[in-house]
Amino acid sequence: MNSPLPGYDESAPRKVHTGMNFLWKRAGQYDQGEKAVMKQIFRRISAAVSAAALTFALSAAAPASEVKAEDAMGSGGRLYFSNGYSVALNWADPYDAYTVQAVTDAWDSAVEESWGGSTLIADHAYQGFSVIRSMGVGSTVTIADGWGGSATYVCISYYSNAYWSDGTTYLPDGRDAWYGDSSLWMKTCNADGTNTVSYWVQAW
Image (cartoon, rainbow, N blue to C red):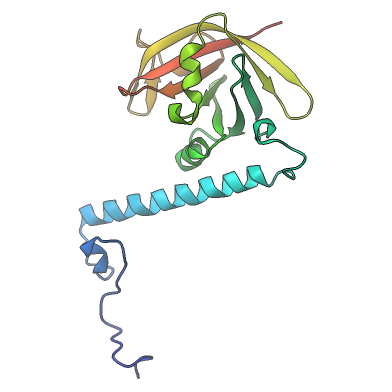
Protein backbone atom coordinates (compact mmCIF):
# COMPACT_ATOMS: atom_id res chain seq x y z
CA MET A 1 0.00 0.00 0.00
CA ASN A 2 1.39 3.38 -1.01
CA SER A 3 2.19 5.86 1.76
CA PRO A 4 -0.28 8.79 1.80
CA LEU A 5 2.58 11.31 1.96
CA PRO A 6 6.14 11.23 0.59
CA GLY A 7 8.47 9.81 3.20
CA TYR A 8 5.57 8.69 5.44
CA ASP A 9 6.30 5.49 7.39
CA GLU A 10 3.21 3.90 8.93
CA SER A 11 5.34 1.72 11.22
CA ALA A 12 7.15 4.70 12.75
CA PRO A 13 6.27 5.85 16.29
CA ARG A 14 3.82 8.73 16.37
CA LYS A 15 5.22 11.90 17.89
CA VAL A 16 3.24 13.45 20.73
CA HIS A 17 4.43 16.92 21.69
CA THR A 18 4.57 16.54 25.46
CA GLY A 19 8.27 16.80 26.17
CA MET A 20 8.20 13.20 27.49
CA ASN A 21 10.27 10.82 25.37
CA PHE A 22 8.30 7.72 26.37
CA LEU A 23 5.23 9.11 24.59
CA TRP A 24 7.00 8.50 21.27
CA LYS A 25 6.51 4.75 21.70
CA ARG A 26 3.93 2.65 19.94
CA ALA A 27 1.12 0.93 21.85
CA GLY A 28 2.34 -2.22 23.59
CA GLN A 29 5.81 -0.84 24.29
CA TYR A 30 5.03 0.97 27.54
CA ASP A 31 6.04 -0.39 30.92
CA GLN A 32 3.73 -0.21 33.94
CA GLY A 33 5.27 3.01 35.26
CA GLU A 34 4.81 4.79 31.94
CA LYS A 35 1.23 3.55 31.68
CA ALA A 36 0.49 4.95 35.14
CA VAL A 37 1.90 8.36 34.18
CA MET A 38 -0.12 8.42 30.97
CA LYS A 39 -3.27 7.48 32.88
CA GLN A 40 -2.71 10.41 35.25
CA ILE A 41 -2.22 12.76 32.30
CA PHE A 42 -5.48 11.70 30.70
CA ARG A 43 -7.33 11.89 34.03
CA ARG A 44 -6.12 15.46 34.53
CA ILE A 45 -7.16 16.39 31.01
CA SER A 46 -10.59 14.87 31.63
CA ALA A 47 -10.99 16.77 34.92
CA ALA A 48 -9.94 20.02 33.25
CA VAL A 49 -12.46 19.51 30.44
CA SER A 50 -15.23 18.75 32.96
CA ALA A 51 -14.36 21.85 34.99
CA ALA A 52 -14.39 24.02 31.87
CA ALA A 53 -17.76 22.60 30.83
CA LEU A 54 -19.19 23.24 34.29
CA THR A 55 -17.87 26.81 34.31
CA PHE A 56 -19.42 27.40 30.89
CA ALA A 57 -22.75 25.96 32.05
CA LEU A 58 -22.81 28.24 35.08
CA SER A 59 -21.97 31.33 33.03
CA ALA A 60 -24.54 30.42 30.37
CA ALA A 61 -27.35 29.73 32.85
CA ALA A 62 -28.74 33.24 32.29
CA PRO A 63 -27.75 36.39 30.39
CA ALA A 64 -25.08 38.43 32.14
CA SER A 65 -27.33 41.47 32.01
CA GLU A 66 -29.91 39.68 34.15
CA VAL A 67 -27.83 37.71 36.65
CA LYS A 68 -24.82 39.14 38.43
CA ALA A 69 -21.88 36.77 38.89
CA GLU A 70 -22.14 36.99 42.66
CA ASP A 71 -25.79 35.85 42.49
CA ALA A 72 -25.35 32.88 40.12
CA MET A 73 -26.96 29.70 41.42
CA GLY A 74 -25.46 26.23 41.16
CA SER A 75 -27.40 22.97 41.05
CA GLY A 76 -27.57 23.11 44.86
CA GLY A 77 -28.24 26.85 45.13
CA ARG A 78 -25.82 29.37 46.63
CA LEU A 79 -24.09 29.66 49.99
CA TYR A 80 -23.83 33.11 51.63
CA PHE A 81 -21.55 33.80 54.60
CA SER A 82 -22.25 36.55 57.12
CA ASN A 83 -19.07 38.41 56.08
CA GLY A 84 -20.34 38.87 52.52
CA TYR A 85 -18.54 36.00 50.79
CA SER A 86 -20.71 33.65 48.71
CA VAL A 87 -20.23 30.69 46.37
CA ALA A 88 -22.43 28.60 44.07
CA LEU A 89 -23.19 25.06 45.29
CA ASN A 90 -23.05 22.15 42.86
CA TRP A 91 -24.06 18.59 43.64
CA ALA A 92 -21.76 15.64 42.95
CA ASP A 93 -21.82 11.94 43.77
CA PRO A 94 -19.17 11.34 46.47
CA TYR A 95 -18.22 8.11 44.68
CA ASP A 96 -17.54 10.00 41.43
CA ALA A 97 -14.09 11.37 42.26
CA TYR A 98 -13.55 13.00 38.89
CA THR A 99 -16.76 15.04 39.03
CA VAL A 100 -16.14 15.98 42.65
CA GLN A 101 -12.69 17.28 41.68
CA ALA A 102 -13.97 19.12 38.60
CA VAL A 103 -16.75 20.84 40.55
CA THR A 104 -14.30 21.84 43.29
CA ASP A 105 -11.69 23.10 40.83
CA ALA A 106 -14.17 25.34 38.97
CA TRP A 107 -14.24 28.96 40.11
CA ASP A 108 -17.30 30.11 42.03
CA SER A 109 -18.26 26.50 42.63
CA ALA A 110 -18.21 24.56 45.90
CA VAL A 111 -19.00 20.85 45.78
CA GLU A 112 -22.01 19.55 47.71
CA GLU A 113 -22.08 15.83 48.50
CA SER A 114 -24.49 13.69 50.51
CA TRP A 115 -23.69 10.34 52.11
CA GLY A 116 -24.88 8.42 55.14
CA GLY A 117 -27.44 11.07 56.07
CA SER A 118 -24.88 13.90 56.09
CA THR A 119 -24.13 16.66 53.60
CA LEU A 120 -20.66 18.05 52.97
CA ILE A 121 -19.86 21.39 51.35
CA ALA A 122 -16.21 21.76 50.37
CA ASP A 123 -14.02 23.98 48.22
CA HIS A 124 -10.42 25.08 47.79
CA ALA A 125 -9.12 27.57 50.33
CA TYR A 126 -7.36 29.57 47.61
CA GLN A 127 -10.66 30.09 45.81
CA GLY A 128 -12.12 31.83 48.84
CA PHE A 129 -13.33 28.97 51.01
CA SER A 130 -10.63 29.79 53.54
CA VAL A 131 -13.48 31.94 54.87
CA ILE A 132 -14.62 29.03 57.03
CA ARG A 133 -11.43 29.35 59.07
CA SER A 134 -12.80 32.63 60.46
CA MET A 135 -16.34 31.31 60.95
CA GLY A 136 -16.31 29.90 64.48
CA VAL A 137 -19.09 28.71 66.75
CA GLY A 138 -22.09 31.05 66.53
CA SER A 139 -21.33 32.22 62.99
CA THR A 140 -24.16 32.06 60.47
CA VAL A 141 -24.57 31.23 56.78
CA THR A 142 -27.57 31.23 54.47
CA ILE A 143 -28.25 28.74 51.69
CA ALA A 144 -30.54 29.95 48.91
CA ASP A 145 -32.13 27.18 46.85
CA GLY A 146 -32.47 29.19 43.65
CA TRP A 147 -36.27 28.99 43.70
CA GLY A 148 -36.90 31.80 46.17
CA GLY A 149 -36.38 29.75 49.32
CA SER A 150 -33.53 29.98 51.80
CA ALA A 151 -32.42 28.62 55.17
CA THR A 152 -30.01 29.99 57.77
CA TYR A 153 -27.52 27.77 59.59
CA VAL A 154 -25.47 28.33 62.75
CA CYS A 155 -22.01 26.91 63.38
CA ILE A 156 -22.00 24.62 66.43
CA SER A 157 -18.44 23.24 66.31
CA TYR A 158 -15.15 23.97 64.63
CA TYR A 159 -11.95 21.95 64.11
CA SER A 160 -8.85 23.58 62.67
CA ASN A 161 -6.75 20.42 62.48
CA ALA A 162 -8.84 17.58 61.09
CA TYR A 163 -6.79 15.19 58.99
CA TRP A 164 -7.21 13.15 55.83
CA SER A 165 -6.17 9.50 55.49
CA ASP A 166 -7.00 6.84 52.89
CA GLY A 167 -9.81 8.91 51.39
CA THR A 168 -11.47 9.76 54.70
CA THR A 169 -11.44 12.96 56.75
CA TYR A 170 -11.03 12.39 60.47
CA LEU A 171 -11.67 14.75 63.36
CA PRO A 172 -8.88 15.24 65.95
CA ASP A 173 -10.60 12.73 68.26
CA GLY A 174 -10.49 10.05 65.55
CA ARG A 175 -14.12 10.17 64.42
CA ASP A 176 -14.98 9.94 60.73
CA ALA A 177 -16.02 13.50 59.81
CA TRP A 178 -19.09 12.17 57.97
CA TYR A 179 -20.38 11.12 61.41
CA GLY A 180 -19.53 14.32 63.24
CA ASP A 181 -21.53 16.82 65.27
CA SER A 182 -24.39 17.49 62.82
CA SER A 183 -25.68 16.46 59.41
CA LEU A 184 -24.21 19.52 57.63
CA TRP A 185 -20.46 20.08 57.60
CA MET A 186 -18.00 22.18 55.65
CA LYS A 187 -14.38 21.54 54.84
CA THR A 188 -11.34 23.20 53.27
CA CYS A 189 -7.64 22.37 53.19
CA ASN A 190 -4.95 24.07 55.24
CA ALA A 191 -1.45 24.90 54.05
CA ASP A 192 0.07 22.20 56.28
CA GLY A 193 -2.06 19.42 54.78
CA THR A 194 -4.65 19.31 57.55
CA ASN A 195 -8.29 20.31 57.10
CA THR A 196 -10.54 22.91 58.68
CA VAL A 197 -13.93 21.35 59.40
CA SER A 198 -17.04 22.97 60.87
CA TYR A 199 -20.53 21.70 61.66
CA TRP A 200 -23.79 23.58 61.20
CA VAL A 201 -27.43 23.26 62.25
CA GLN A 202 -30.46 25.07 60.88
CA ALA A 203 -31.63 28.11 62.83
CA TRP A 204 -35.37 28.07 63.48
